[in-house]
Picture 1 (cartoon, helix red, strand yellow):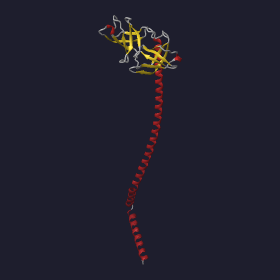
Picture 2: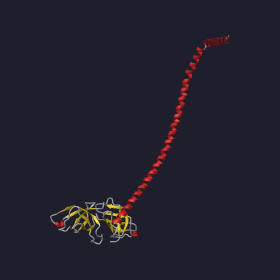
Picture 3: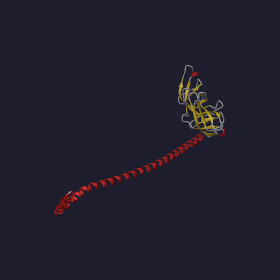
Picture 4: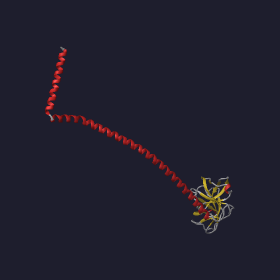
Length: 271
């Protein structure tokens, strides 16, 4: 009985399907369009999604490709920048060497009457009490104690100690320094000493009472005292201080050498 019932249901189902097919085929083109539309509506979203996914993946590949290219390009630029920096440093070194040679040539031409040894400053001790510099030439170069040291614009000082490859120079602005000088206009003799208060000026003392010293006078070495040759420029008078007692008046002499910027020197080996 159960089997007969199941067979009946199957028969009814088959009959319904057949009737539906008959209706569909009997409607012809209209139903074909319906099926096509249904298929299109079902398939198109899937196609669009696949196309979007493909484009997205292609875009990501391009993005990662661009990243790798930029990294490589950045490394190349870093390398080129390093090479340019190295070339710039080499050019600066050449420029500095040329400037040093130029200063040496100027010094040699300016003080051609003296036999000199060129050198440059390797250390400075410019404090309130000690104004000593160290130069890179010594005994093996022919440098000895008490030799005069000059710069491009005038007197620097004299050698106070020597090693094989270096020498200490007491500058004229050192408080222990004392230089016999003369005024270039009147030829009156004075003494210039270093002071605690000034880094680029000397105190001119023992000015003769009848000497007419004025601001702007040029001061040079007198050749007296046994250390400095005669006629080396020291500086110019920038201020004269008069006192009640004319024997106590003094002047400030601004040095021709800028000791903060001093780099190259000549040591005079003969007088």
